[in-house]
Length: 301
Image 1 (cartoon, rainbow, N blue to C red):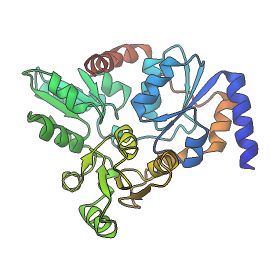
Image 2 (tube, rainbow, N blue to C red; image 1 turned 180 degrees about the horizontal axis):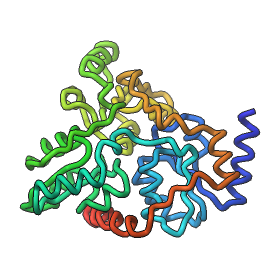
Image 3 (cartoon, rainbow, N blue to C red; image 1 turned 120 degrees about the vertical axis):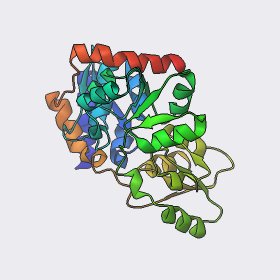
Image 4 (cartoon, helix red, strand yellow; image 1 turned 90 degrees about the vertical axis):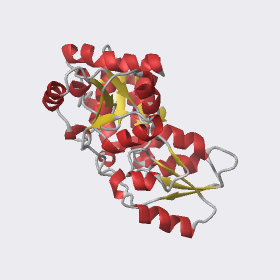
C-alpha cells in the first residue's frame, strides 16, 4: 500500500538524516512527500542549507550532479540512475572543446541543464530564470551559448546581444506548438498564458510571459490571475493547483510530458533510502572546474 511506503520513507529519511528534493516536473505523489520543491538550481542551493547527510534528488541526472558539485561532503542519491536529460546529452565536453577551438577567445555560457563535464569547460552557467541577467553582465565579449538554442534565442531577444547558439533543445518543450496555445486561448479566453523559455520562439510570441518554473509558481499566486494556460511540463499543474485553490490551470499541451522525470516513483525513493544507491558523485577534478561557472553565476544573481 502507498501509505505503508510513505511511512517507511519517512522512517528511513529520519534514520539516514536525509532530505528529499523534488523538481516541479516530478509525479504529484513524489512532490507531496518532498521536503522542498522547486527548479533544479533552487533545489541544489536548498540542499546546501540543510544539515542532512543524504540528499535524495527527485529529478534527472544533471540536477543530481549540480547538487553534488555544490555539496561535495554529502551523499547525493538519484532514485533512478536512468533518469537523464536528452537536451543535456546533445553536447559533450569534447564537442564543446572543439567549438571553443573554432571560436578562439569565446566566452561560454552554459545552461544549467548540462552535464558536469560540460559545465567544467564553461565560463558561466545560467538558468532559465537568470539567463538574461547573466548574459547582460558579460561585457564586450563574443558569447557561445549551449546547449539550448531556444533559450538562447529568447535571451538574444531580451538582451539585444548576438550569440553563437548550439543546436540543442528540450524534446518535451518543443512538443508545445503555436496551435496548442491558440486553441487553448479560444477555449479559455480570459486566461493568462505563461510558457517556458525553452519553448519554440513562435510559442513564446503568443504568451503573456515566458518564465522559469519558479517564475510560473510566483505568477500563478498573483491576485489578478484566475485562469492560467501553462506551457511547460504538465506535472507543474499539480503544484500550482495545490498552492492556489479556486484557480484554474490548463496545460498548453497534454503532450508536454518528460518521460525521464516520470521514472522516479515512491517505490524507487524507498529503495534508494534502503540501499543508499544509486549515488551521483562528480569526480573532484571535474567538480572543482564545474563549480567556477556556477559560482560566477551566483555572484551575478
